[in-house]
Length: 207
Image (cartoon, rainbow, N blue to C red; front, top):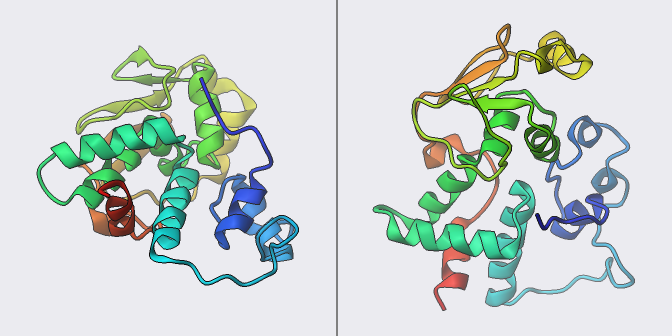
């Protein structure tokens, strides 16, 4: 499985904003964006005016990095979104939000999407009672995601119960004592709080 392996804080600095890729660290003074709020590299502090193409590219890169998706899979999601009824940009964000790793993160069972992917790959979750270790799995309404019974006794999941903040998006429901979440409905654009101009992504891929 291909994945980005370099320092993730560089990604946040390149986008000029927090992408919350390192969980709790992103909320502290140790955050790279807080300490060095400019792009990495020799010319990172120089100001450049972006072209229309540049703005479209930055939005695509931002979305990919928020959700931890590489180019080939992201383009596949775009093609799926175009074929679905409705607005392609909103369809694209809904598909990204419906990935299993994002749902585990949104339920509060992981401190970042990267940690959620790791937990899923290591086999700590079931979907509808069956073990599933594919972070890119697209969930559907009615699906039930739960930490495996054997995993629930681990220090990681005990910590989840202790520090759980009790707030999840309204398209999800959660039972923290059972470490169980359910897909109540598919997310709408209003439910997605990530600052992405999805229309620019559609413009880029539609050329």
